[in-house]
Amino acid sequence: MQEDAKYWYLHDHQLFSVLSREENRALCLIPSFKTVKKNEILYFSHDEEQRLYTIKSGTLKIVRVDNDGNETVKDVLRSGDLFGQYTFDEIEDENQDEYAVAVSDKVVFCSFRINDFEEILKRNPQLAIRYTKLVGFRIKRISNNYANLMFKDVKTRFALFLKDWAMKEGNGKDKDVVIKNYLTHNDIAGLICSTRQTVTLLFNELKNVGLIDYNRNEITIYDVAKLA
Image (cartoon, rainbow, N blue to C red; front, side):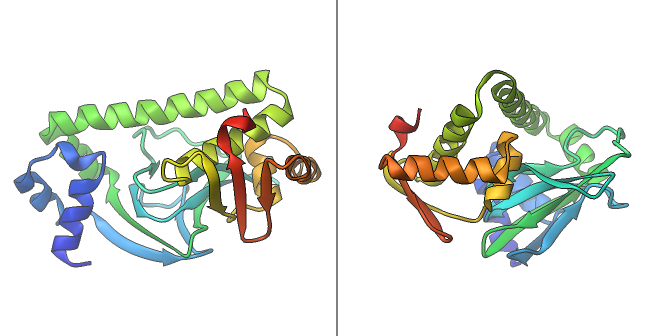
């Protein structure tokens, strides 16, 4: 990637926007910038070299693998999101692993070695504060997801999932939102803690009452507000 392209990526990213022009220019020399195509794996949690990743463009899913080899979609991440070893701790669950795989046509991302990123934070207090806030927002979102799993029925969890998906990819629209359908029913079942059969039934139920339409390639939500 050209240095100017690296600079503008960092400059426009919500994490690095607090840095000055000179600081961003200097930062361009540190991270690794890469592009992967759909279905390529970007990251394994047990890679020997631990890194922090930020997404420039595209969409990926984080897949958790338990000790028996069962896979569950843990999260869906988009442009601007962070993933990898973003908490800097050394604690690992030996019974579970996870990996990130591209689900859009391509994903452009950059990554920092953990030691390098820690040094960057030490030299840039404003960046450290922004980073802490972003990690806090992510943890809060995960906490809200767990609360939904505990206290809401599966139909409500499904509707909230579709609403959140539409809000993130609808470019501000709340009517006739068309979403590229890159998740399987099994993926969605993992995200809302249900089964593939139930997800299929819920899709058909919303389609029959005229709230959505869907096929293998895209989902159309006619009125996002009515999903709630």
